Image 1 (tube, rainbow, N blue to C red):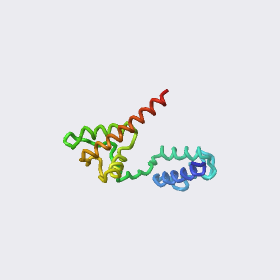
Image 2 (image 1 turned 90 degrees about the vertical axis):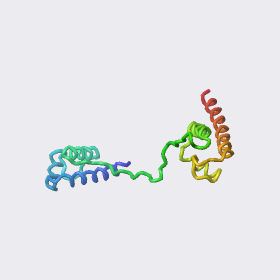
Image 3 (image 1 turned 90 degrees about the horizontal axis):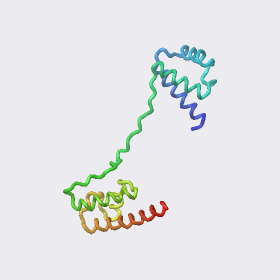
Image 4 (image 1 turned 120 degrees about the vertical axis):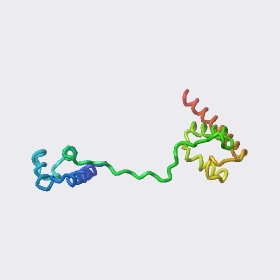
Length: 154
């Protein structure tokens, strides 16, 4: 953030703070600037002084909170629950363990399964041949990954 961008952001905070403080009309604000900083206008203040002014307004009762960022509606959880009653639960757990070990995001596992087998979700895999194919592919990747790690360690 440039000095000018910081300055503009602080101006905005100051205005928010002034609106929250009923006693901080224009006369009171100018008096505060003169008493605390020896200036008549915010334009004559440094970024550090503007920051201190924000703190003074906060001490007087102004509240500054950053706006909440909306959560992504489609964000998938960072885990996949494999129950014992699922078909091929042991193999699916192995697949998940290797997937994690390789550092892949779990959300990309569904993408991999969709592209490879036309099934939208990993947990919906029920075909033994498909599960074996996926597990074999990941085991090959795991061996390559381990070799790379071993070479990097030397």
